[in-house]
Length: 99
Image (cartoon, rainbow, N blue to C red; front, side):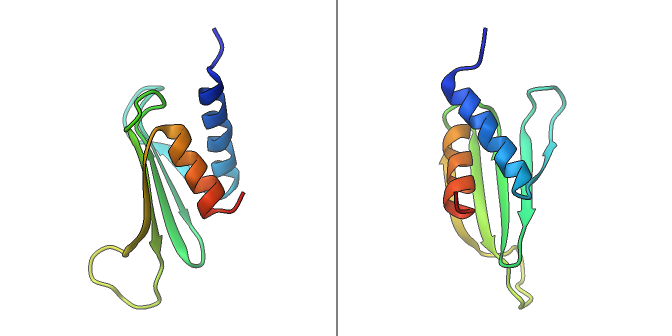
């Protein structure tokens, strides 16, 4: 049985994210384990967590502004998105990266 249209779209957006500079790694064992993607650009550090393609609230992404100052703790979060894989990937690939 083939992928649903939503699953196929999410997989295409994952491929676009990879070609757009994200480095993904599986952070738990197994072929369906969660993925963590990170991309560093001149002004931003973007992180995507994909906990699963089927759960509507298993994914999130954050965008942090990179600063030339030394900031105690983590970089401040400028944007964040929660939801399913399609929503999170679409937001990061299209809104944060410019489709």
